[in-house]
Image 1 (cartoon, rainbow, N blue to C red):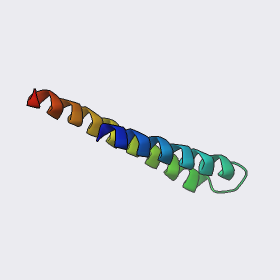
Image 2 (image 1 turned 180 degrees about the vertical axis):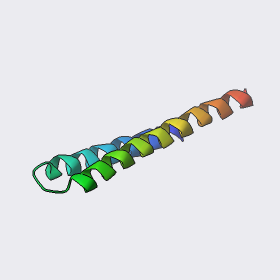
Image 3 (image 1 turned 135 degrees about the vertical axis):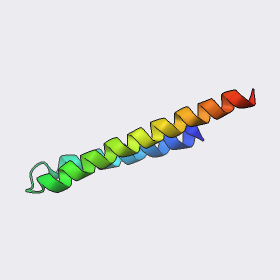
Length: 61
């Protein structure tokens, strides 16, 4: 499960970074700020899920 989350997070973050980069020349600072926050929140969620997955795997051993 962690590998799938890492893959999704990486692909999503890459795409969102492309979108952010394309907005640098526009007048959409609020949207850019919101997307940056969303990316950080998604990264935190994936990190937390990965840690929980590892913890659960350790309990099964």
